[in-house]
Length: 270
Picture 1 (cartoon, rainbow, N blue to C red):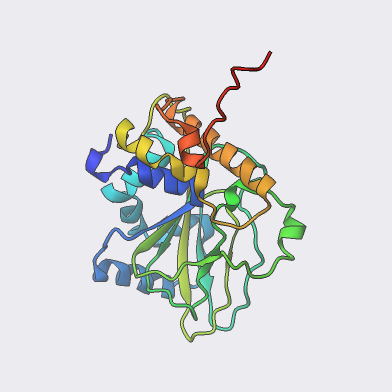
Picture 2 (picture 1 turned 180 degrees about the vertical axis):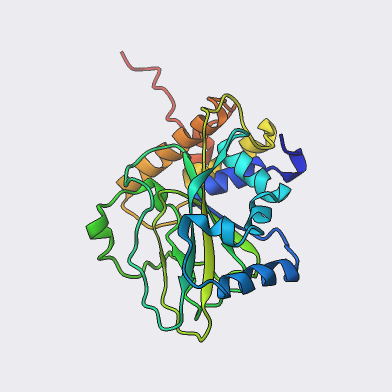
């Protein structure tokens, strides 16, 4: 088990449920990030799933207590690292990827798998950062249609400091953008799996604080959509919260968050 100080809190969990991603910088030393970057530059071929054999220092990224605290918060204390991992090299002159989901293109309300993307170097707009469309882990589109979409006004670019990690819900829409710089942009992608159904929150849960922030699930719209889709999204957010907490019920009034008051009963009705 991880010390509470390394776990996420309720507000951060709500934000992950809503956005489908979070960016975190564990503050690795400059020498540590530089060592990984130099070893990546020295690779003769891309080792794919065997990247840990070539750059064993990457184990220290995922073994960092702060990083483990985030993964435990999202997936539970029994989470495991998937055998699939990859070194993504976005070289100068590359073109943008098409939008895609790494998952099975299914609309659901669970956090089954989390992508961890570690960047050993600072990533600027010109270096082909990863683009993400917040909230789209609750959306579904056939891959061939998803690939025809262009830029989204709500998309986020992963311009990050060296040593940063982007944690992504496995089903979120994302893509590498074109690299117009003279540097190769490296990203090491690892997958982490949830192994047991939650019976209680796996983060630092405080019912009083959770009540304060619960309204975020019902009022925040991060990717513009039709009102009917937003209703479905809010429903899935609540289902995801229930799934992650093991069914904890909070003492809240949804009317308070919606800004609506229940109509008074007409006592004169027959």
